[in-house]
Length: 599
Ligand code: GDP
Image (cartoon, rainbow, N blue to C red):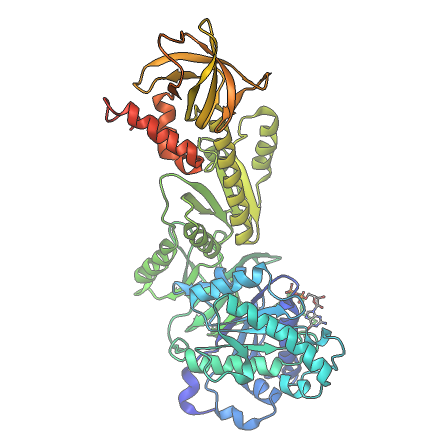
């Protein structure tokens, strides 16, 4: 490797995609690649990540001349796949992963988590590739283990190639639908404009050399500046996981992406509130499998340089947060480092509204991702917090009157047993009946379920309203159809617009309320209401035909002012055109003397 290249660190790669599409298998295959070479003792074992050194990649691709082409030392794959790991692992306001691989099962095509992964990568502007996995499952496919895609593809029959093309271009089509210009990797000339798609089999290793090679190329072309690091600088990393280890107590698994961390270093670690300041008691890496005589799975090391995955044992780290920064400090830099860590955590303290839902998630990264999606969908958020659902959360949500907001939207967390008890109890006691919990490990599902719920609520409210609300109605007394003069008057009418219901008051065009509808009959049968176009017999209490009203008069349903406001300003769009027209006529009459009536 050339001298000037020594300063670029290993790019960090995250594998994402829908469940069962083969993320773990792909990572296992890559790990296998690394470990086979490990026999020569060249590979470093990591905590939570697998490093594939550049010489292994070059050898896989079978062209030694490539060795000089690349100036990164290899690739560091995060062992935990999924967009969850991707958003959890934050650094510098973005994602810790420099690159990503989105796995799509070529036989299944796009699924919700495929789309979710693509959206997240778009938002973070992370360079990535798509792999269409499980090509070995294509009918008639002949496996050529570990070969590059083109090499194995060229050995397939034309029928198999045809089958492959069909499925492959289906995926390309889906990518277009999501707004990506995409093509098979070997046909892409500019990876910045066109997304490279690599057909692979995680199981047989076909296409894996291409994946490694293209990732190296992407890192080199687009990441050179973000891969610059200072090996002598302070260690800077992200907490991957907070874990209890037998014999060690609480430990944190960290991905270090800048500088060097040493045993005994003072480190500042993010948590909600004031950061933790502590000293590294031990730095640990996985013990080689061959060293079985040791009881502990871990081997202490003196120092570690970026990029690397390492376990840290230290006092007082119980409430370190997954996804939070960890930075080493000297007595001179300590105050500034504390400020820096604090401000990074504060950055993700979410802007909230005065009204809205409660959101809870397992890490700050996922909380932020959730808030982003919900804000995009115009959902108000009153509170956003990391952690499981507690009794206090339920109480708090239950005090909110608006059923749309009396909810807890929970991502990847548990409901504490005592909180669950409260929720169950409420079914009987009706105390917290309004609190709804939407829990899932896919953000989009939570969003969908919540939006369906809101729609339901609104429809119910609408129904409730329209049942009790007095709607606009207009009718004409038909000539020659006065069956009774008074007490009550019985007349034939035609409904000119809207609806006339039993027990509603009626009004003359001059604004006087003259009587009440006390019965409607259609073809001799009692009906509760009459709608536009109908001709019915109407009993009118309180009027005498020939005195207040006469044949050919047009009358209106009397709408109280409060109902009129709802009709005009809240649900006008839901009224039928004749109802709208009738309401407008009614308002003209009402506002002749009182211009602000119903406003
Ligand atoms: P994940 O949920 O995305 O991590 O998916 P897994 O890696 O667990 O794979 C799900 C299933 O698909 C497992 O039974 C794998 O053995 C199988 N699988 C994954 N990749 C391939 C592949 O390339 N070819 C075949 N035939 N099966 C695969």
